[in-house]
Amino acid sequence: HISTQTLREIYDIFGQMGFQVLRSPDVEDDETNFQMLNIPPHHPARDMWSTFYTTCPGVLLRTHTSPGQIHAMRKFHPAPIRVILPGKCYRYEQVSVRSEQMFHQVEGLVVGHNITMADLKGTLVNFARQMFGAERRLRFRPSYFPFTEPSAEADMDCFICGGKGCAVCKYTG
Image (cartoon, rainbow, N blue to C red; front, side, top):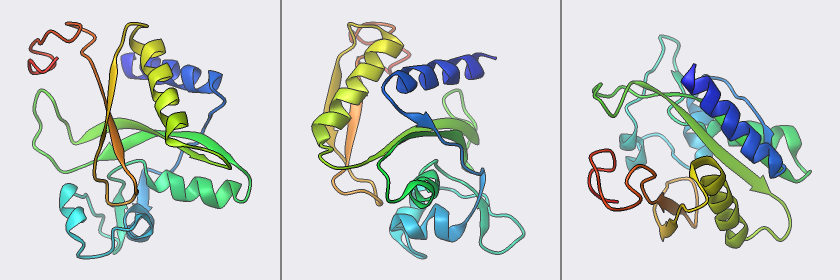
């Protein structure tokens, strides 16, 4: 399947950079999915996700792969950590051409001495160029995520139109 092939390519690229793949459960408890990530009950950031809760109180389908970071830190502490956390995420959203109630997400976690934002930037640039072509350009900008500080997002030029603007990138380039 194309999703499996793409995930395998992602694993290979990050594996070449020294990352290991760590899988975590699709079903989480509220504490691991939200509270341990600095999103306590009634926090406005919870509005960012439309969560699928189960009939068991406090148990839900994970809304992001970030709970895997909790599992990684518990498993590897106090050793340095360099993992990617792939998985399915679930959100109660309107199904459209661009979104679905289940999607794949991959995030990374690196913990160690002398790790800097420059390391993050280099890792993401290297990944984007291996995955989408050596000519890819990235832009980094500050952003807000309720569970990290500082936070940043990386934008990549569209690999279809090369940054000129097309329907796939909503004409943003």
